[in-house]
Length: 491
Ligand code: NAP
Ligand code: MG
Image (tube, rainbow, N blue to C red; front, side, top):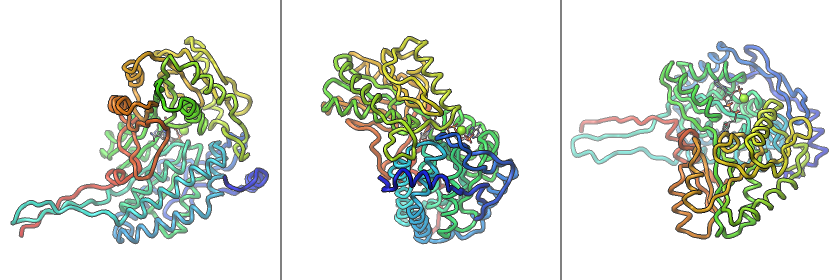
């Protein structure tokens, strides 16, 4: 809980005075046109931010390039870089309320969750990589008596990060913190829907003393600004989180330009398997509901396919439906709200089209399915879903659960893996061997046993198959932003 009452959040929202434009080379600047930022809470235009053209993207990349090629950042001791990142984390913590409010207003998640979950993750991530900066060592392999080989990790150069709106600051921090800790410089392009929190993050980086050009933020449309970064010869690594469709574009941009390395964290359609011997069926049902409705279902890891053993399906489903119906959907600034609006009217329409597809394909609606007003949508549950239905195959990215039933473990694993995606999965069972067998058989980057969404900065996160590759978080993420260099010395 934030301790800030509803009325106070509302009056702060009235007084909102966000940064606009872009943040390049240590300062706010205009460039290209402007884009309105519309709050899904009430349709209000919060601000107009920059809509970068290719020339503005060039300026940002040039600033990052200069900061890398000539500036102090890659040349300072890792301990000093870590200290600067720690100062940045402290400022993010100082302004946590404001950042949470910006996130909540721009993309619609409850402000209490923006504060308690998102901002906590961001501060934790910045601190974790700040502290890791000087805790690594290079290698001197035992190559023999007449020569010495050194294997060192060097920063890759300019990193461009293109991120989505669902966890706008967390996704940015997962890229920026390891890249900057490694000594790279960066250009961030937030999603069109969530530029305000990113601009504030950049202002705090400058206040913390990160040298100009080390972190730049360009706003604009994906097809223009995102594409210009993807094709830019001055970008060495492109770190992307978003949809599988746009991930494909980035591989093409790289192939058609300088072969920059592209790291992809993409969509998901994660299976959540409930076996009849689950240690606590009620907890499994509650977690299934919480998992799909958290953040309005706008989660890459959302357990959007509930695979439940036929013998317990009735009991589990009853509880999931009760949870769905009991959820408080409403104003994201009300600390009592459990689910805010979807990110935009366009996205709400896309999700509603899937509700129609569920009906048309013959699934049975058990809860929700309706949009009360504005961008809001009731938590929705379909049962009698079969694997070929669109609601069983496509990533909906909204609060829509598809329930499928199975008769034995092999069928459960087959159903679970019957997807193009491979981001996450879960299994609920008291049988240790079954848990391990299922975990090994599932093609997913993360498998949870008797839990969901468990996570820690020390543990890598990412996907298989069309959910992408590469890992955010943990020391492994540093590999994405460093090159291995070998130096031979004849003795
Ligand atoms: P998106 O449409 O793929 O957009 C992601 C980012 O790419 C945005 O900054 C977007 O900019 C930009 N973009 C769009 N079209 C582009 C193009 N043609 N060229 C270059 N850049 C382009 O995804 P989203 O709707 O923001 O987010 C939802 C998706 O993110 C879901 O698929 C979800 O699963 C995925 N996601 C994955 C993870 C993970 O870790 N695996 C985490 C969170 C979300 P504009 O929006 O400004 O156009
Ligand atoms: Mg978008």
